[in-house]
Amino acid sequence: MTYKEAQESYHRIQEKKSNLSKSDSAWLKEVEAYPIDERFDTETSKMALLFEIFNNNLLDGFNTVFRIGYIAGQKALEEKGMKK
Image (cartoon, rainbow, N blue to C red; front, side):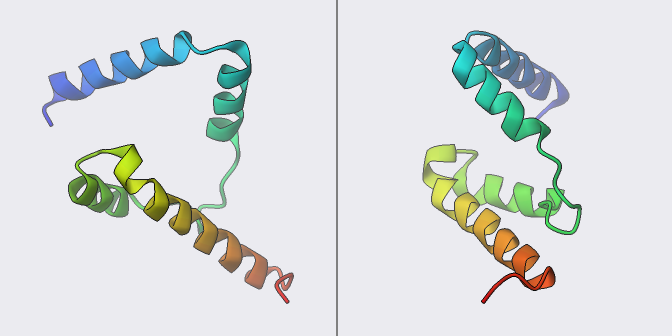
């Protein structure tokens, strides 16, 4: 992806976000602002790998992305000694 393509994509995303309902906008802002411990954040190289595998298609990759988050959550619970 070229810089120009990335910039155009960014602007499209921002426009779509600005057209969300108030409740959807509030939900997305909450999700994006939620602090993630860097130990459980996804590395850029892993995101690039998913981009390549799923051709940047969220619908196709959602289950995998969900599982990544679930596994990170389980690891966080284990580290806090909360998992049974």
